[in-house]
Length: 249
Image 1 (tube, rainbow, N blue to C red):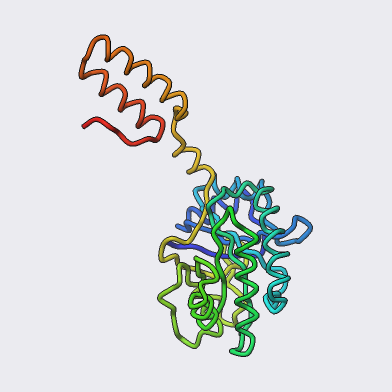
Image 2: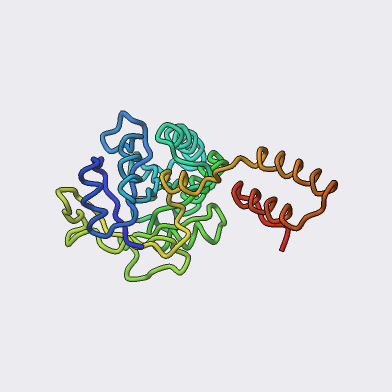
């Protein structure tokens, strides 16, 4: 799946342009609204409406992960607040950035940061953005469940743990310009934890489970008075309409 990340907020117009270019996801910053690079609800809705899924990433400063556990807990709590503000659905992923070349001597602190961020975001899955070494170390420590690797500081290696790979940051690592926006290019290998509220709405059952089951209960009462195979079929149609599995073959 083709995607990009950027710091510049996108408009409905630029979202449509990126969608026309074949981009399927955009990684944007899940940081407080006071930040110039913050994703806001209006932008999220514009992206989703254009058919572009969103990857949420939390980053304030490049080396924030060196704050360890205390920083992870604080950033996780902030990320959850912002996620709710922009409408990010529960169960999708929030990535936390390690946007520098973390050395072996720093890795234990980085891992504690990611583990704490994961603890602070129980309603969401948690991911890490970083180099090959970061991805491998955080995976080995089981500190989170999703992994976004950057080409930077990876020395040509691509982790088989990566869900997303940032493969092009421009000729000097300063990004590329597409549709007037500075971007980095990414590829998803699957299970990246992206979200799209428009798709979620399309997939919502038309009938509530509790309403369907009340009707099914009435149908069962009718069946006891006058057994008929058609009643079983209708009950299954109600189960499907409310997102439940069929019971009758």
